[in-house]
Image (cartoon, rainbow, N blue to C red; front, side, top):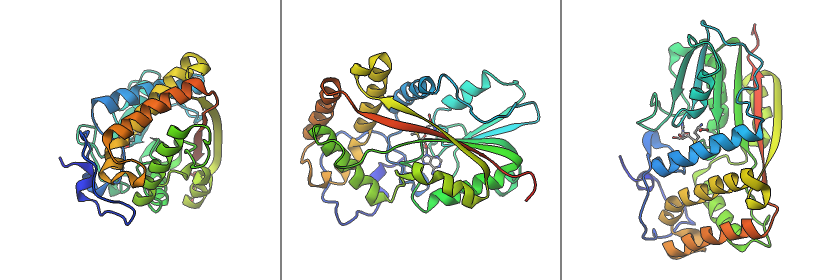
Length: 294
Ligand SMILES: C[S@@+](CC[C@H](N)C(=O)[O-])C[C@H]1O[C@@H](n2cnc3c(N)ncnc32)[C@H](O)[C@@H]1O
C-alpha cells in the first residue's frame, strides 16, 4: 500500500505538503479517488447509506425489474457492499451478485473503468453510486459504455450522484466557503467530474441507453433539519475530514498552512450548519435500459 499522493504529479497550484497525521488511502491502478479507505470512512459510508435510503423513502432500487434466479447484479465502486447486501435481503437468494472496487479488501478488486471482456451481455442490473470524486471527466463516458457492454439486452443501469458544492455559494458561512474552495481545487487538479450529475442523462443517451429517468430529493444538513439533518451533517462533516489528507498533501491551496487550521475549519463548519439553517444538496437516482435489440 502507498499513501495516496505519492504517485501523483503535482499540479501548478499545489505547493509543499503540510505535515499531518495521514489517513489510509489506496492509490491502486493510478486511481485519483480522493477519499480514504479506513475504518472511519467505512463508518461514514454506513451513515451515508442509511441517510440516502431515508431520503428516497427507504427505496434502494428504482429500476422496474423483478430479479429472479437467472439474473446477475453488478455493483461498481461497491466499497463495503452496503447497497448489494441491502438488495440481497429483498430478492430471491439465487440472484447472483458481484461487487467490484479498487480497494483490495473489497469483494472483487478490479482496475478502474475497464471490465472483463467475457462479462459482455451478462448482467440484468448494474448499480453505481457516488463515484463523482472517483472518476475523471474522460472516464465517465468510458465507464458508462462499459456498463452498457456488460448489461444483457433489456438490462438496467441505476446510478446515484449528488449536486456538488459550488464556490461563492455560501457567503455567510466562511468555514464552508474555504473548505469548498479547497475541495474544488483538489478535484480540479485531479480532473474529477464532480459536476457529473447534470450531464449523466446526456452521457447515458450517448452510450446507447433508452428510457432514461431520474428522481431527485433534497438532503438537508444540520440539526435544524431534525434527526435526518443531524445524520446528513455527520456524513458530510466526515466527508470533509476525509478530504484533509489530499488537501494537505497538495499544500492547502493557499487557504491554510497547518493541519490544525484545517481541523478548526471543520469544527467551524459544524457550528455554521447548526446555527445558520439552509444548506441542502439535491440527490439524484438515474436509471435507464439497454435496448432489447441493437
Ligand atoms: C464514495 S464511495 C461509495 C461506496 C458505495 N458505492 C456506497 O455508495 O456505499 C466510492 C467507492 O468507489 C471506489 N472507487 C473509486 N474509484 C474507483 C474506480 N475507478 N473503479 C471502481 N471503484 C472505485 C472507492 O474505493 C470507494 O469504495
